Length: 278
Image (tube, rainbow, N blue to C red; front, side):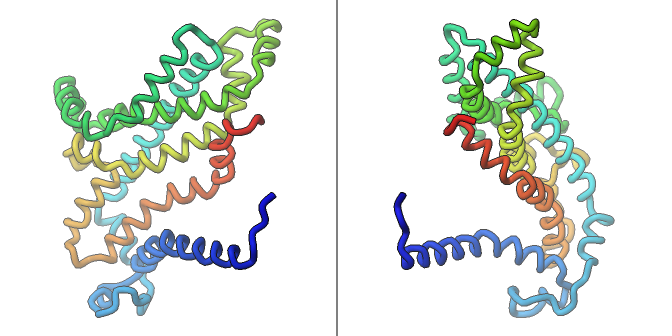
């Protein structure tokens, strides 16, 4: 095992700390600024601490704005998208890896090709299609494309994990009278807990913060999600009311941060599941 010298450790710690500050400081600054009053933003030092901490910004964004509506829409889109992605990707990976057929690897390759398709390429075709079938300005127009774009990497993660589940376990279950659906739902799917958590957290961050689809397909105020709602919200309060803007940003970033910190260990285990046998 390679040993690291004391000097190298010091350099590594300094670099790691610098990267940590670069990543964390903007979030901390936004959160602290959300407690500032109008007089604090009128000063010359934008990095100063609040002269007096106030919760008025949080009260205003929730009671006077439409943040509650945006939050609810984002929650519906995120939960529905994640559930569909988990179900479809887990079942597809099971068929590809465990119910091996002649073209299984070709099917997996076709799914993985979806990773290379940029979102911007499909915006106009999807807009025309959604407009014809009448789902523009509905949450379905956000859920469907996000499920499609999340499937390739999710299927790959499940396939990587299923490779290391012994086929003998499945054969024993079949010998005991279990059908294919019972093997999947009672054995394979419960064993995929870490991979499921990884897929949930990874996709939740992208779905919760997704802006392109929401800005393209949603124009109705009642159907807007948080990213588009924040853009409109800033205009509603004016560019000078930064306290309200920072309070809205702080509220919307809390869910993804909480989910990630709670399931951090499971995410790491799920990402490395294909590297070692479990």
